[in-house]
Length: 73
Image (cartoon, rainbow, N blue to C red; front, side, top):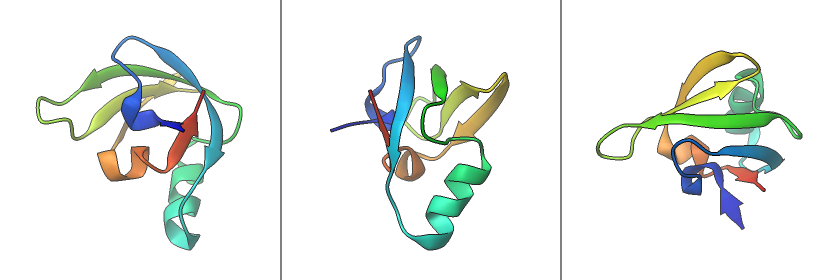
């Protein structure tokens, strides 16, 4: 299983499935990370947290813990 955390800088991935429970899952979906959406990894902070993404035409920054809940292909 490959997660959003594993995607390299400059690569694009497609969200396959969301993991997590209740409020965490809802927050990820509210940020626009839903099944089938393309995600481009723009930058990763020096210590790996947070990760800057381009989703649906806007920039989004997510924590590594949240990125682990997003399965991609």
